[in-house]
Length: 267
Image (cartoon, rainbow, N blue to C red; front, side, top):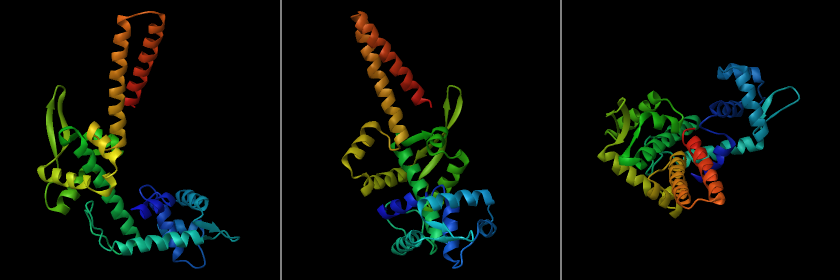
């Protein structure tokens, strides 16, 4: 995984599939290709291809010759070699985070790992939430994905493992029914097995997750803002009981911090 993160720093796999397509296409072209030819082969808009090429040039993965043709640099070739080596070592992607098998192609390998990581995040966020349950809208905000897309990931997860890991439930609230994602009993076992993964063996990370009951950084920050606001509110009450000019200044500062916390919580 360390090697994958290193490669991901060169190409953000989760957001830059065009960049990966360009690198793979240039590898198969000894004479080089123009931006127009790349756009035609990839069936992408020329502007999108040009933006991706600029980023790849800045990272040192591709270069342009005097004729305006693009080629892979030594770094670009080394990037692909390392990605192929990583793929060969993981001919079948196994481990506690395994959900899918990997096909023998670089692009498929990367896309499968991306999908695995998204499914992993979904399980960890739902599992670390109160009662192993989180509202569909909140999970959508955290991941930056639509609810329907999350539904597709969960459906794929359940069908792949041939059991229900996460199910969608509707709970009656004051203003109507709300949709939640909830771990099943089998899902709780999967979640506990993921906690034993080396990624979670660091003491501070495990302690934070245990104390705050949250895995994702945005959930942890939101809970910390609540704790901070409660502490500030307690300070205000204490100073109100013993008022003077200095205490009023402290109260004003504490109120300002509470307002900031509220803005951060609902951002």
